[in-house]
Amino acid sequence: MNRRIELLAILVAVMMASSGMAVCTLIAIDSAPHPIRVACVGDSITEGSGYPGRLQIMLGSNYMVRNFGVSGSTVSLNSTKPYMNQTAFQKAEAFSPQVVVIMLGTNDANPQITQNEENFEADYSQLIRSFEDLEGNQAVWIVKSPPIFSENSSYNNTYLADTILPQVDNVANQLDLPTVDIYTAFGNHSDYFMDGVHPNGDGASLIASNVYDAITQNGSSPEDSFAYGQ
Image (cartoon, rainbow, N blue to C red; front, side, top):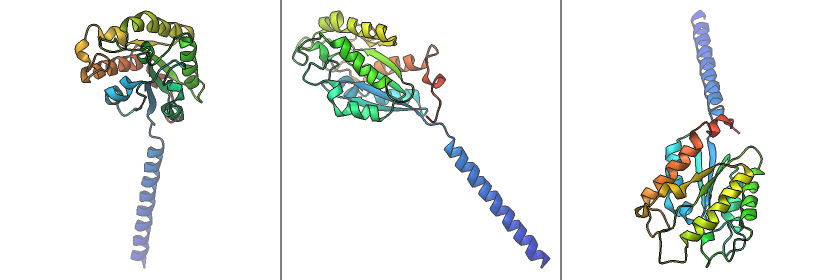
């Protein structure tokens, strides 16, 4: 009888230990940090270049990067394809991003797509505030579009550099937001483009590395201001 009692006691102890381990495991899983959600907003350069995927690799598992680019889209609401009228915009908001990276403006420099830019700054501010008004805290980075090297299309680099990008700077200054100067980063690297407008693999890596630096360097890392699990 004593032997049976001893065996029963051992069995109960093992079961309790196993249960405790299970509880600990569940607690560990439940308290594991959730990745910081990063929404990449933009046009075909975002949608098709592959830079968001490269950014995900660079940032690592503490981040969840999602691509919400829409080919042909613009900041301007007075165009053939305003970004704010696209389903991707709604999906980006539903994603509840903690970090928003916006790179738009190339199609605003194409007169066949955008008729005029009279309300560009107001439209850009509206786009940004739509993300800032989401629940929680959002860090927004405005990315200045890369240069246009194509001479056989309606895309106009002079208009981009002299009209669009200065307005992008104005919006950033007015809303006190940081910019990522991809335009300058490309320099004269026309070889980083497939067609003078859309970056190739090297161009995508350049964009990703500059955005990565902006998010993680100089004390601006969202990890410092966003609590995991939010």
